[in-house]
Length: 159
Ligand SMILES: [Zn+2]
Image 1 (tube, rainbow, N blue to C red):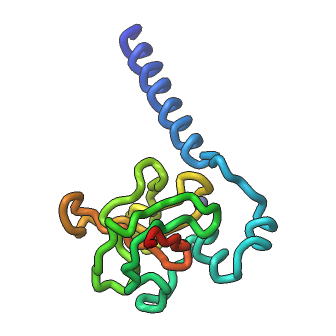
Image 2 (cartoon, rainbow, N blue to C red):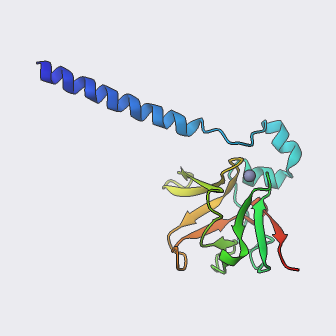
Image 3 (cartoon, protein in one colour):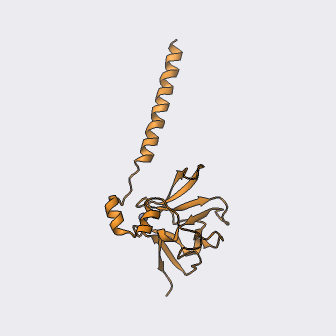
């Protein structure tokens, strides 16, 4: 009987830890936070829809789909550098695609919007939605970061 009770209490501890983890995930706080009213004031309606409501621009309509100048792509919402043009490639999907992000500046989360799990990409500074990452990219990473142009702003490093 004592063994059973010990077992039950261990289960209880495991479950409560798991619960706390989930709560932490949901209440993740970012270095840059604004109220919804502030985001709306700072972004266009379409930028707000994509960046703050995880919307998606239509394929082949974004400014940076066929854009191959040398420079850095920053977060449109908070200007954090997210992607280097050196890691951009033409995926043919109609969205700007990168095989890697600038280290530590892009966060991932899981979204079930289409009924199955997709890895969502977020700005690690402000939590704004960027796009999704898929496992069919080129070497060396094999990743395809599929990003909305409207989530980005380009800063040229060409002389
Ligand atoms: Zn940001």
